[in-house]
Image 1 (cartoon, one colour):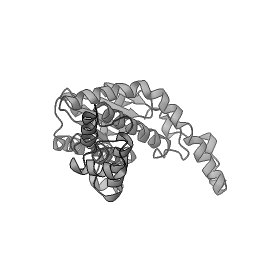
Image 2: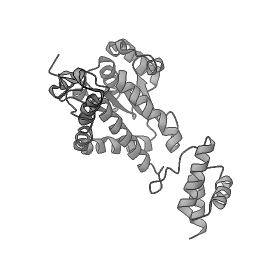
Image 3: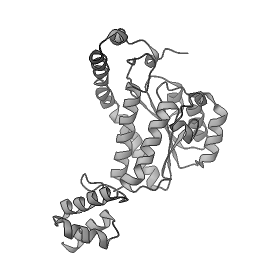
Image 4: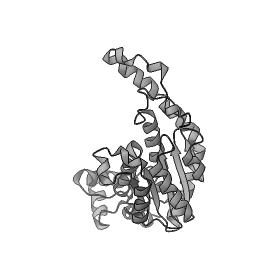
Length: 274
């Protein structure tokens, strides 16, 4: 194996097992503070992925995340949150995790070495030319993720990667790679920590920016969100009220007229008050 910084010993935390509880937390927190600055350095490359994703979705294509272990679980969470938050159809951004849905609850880390399972998952995914695939892996060399990316590449898909090391196997396959160089973890090799935090931040900003570009946000209001419970209904009413200046009763009436579709209600109000 090549030199992999995320698998090295962190000298700053080498005595963490002898620390007080507060001391442990301070060491972890100090390492976490470095992640945002590292992600900042990645923004120009993330913007490339955002623009390509917007182009893909606007053209009828789909986005596939593929990850294993922590990376896969973070990818599943990001994709799952887009339909309720932005009204995006569930099949537009899809996450594929090594070990399948069950790996969300019960770790199936051994699956990340299986190229055969990756090919099966790729075939089952329905990924086709015109879609976009983003592989996510701290090491940048998980065979499952790498294989999924390679299969997408064969079809001519745009392939991106989010990794935490330089010059990885995944980078060699990807058209564009985000390298968030978070370095040695608090606990050697525990990439669910800084590496995982960086991946969470990057996927959050990536998917949020894509949905903004698709027109699912008005100013900074998530006007395309799905209202599915009392809390979200109250949030929707408050949102319509804040945007239009109507009191809450008027805002609720307007929202009901448009079947709880915030974007339609706001658009109708704007058109009627021009």
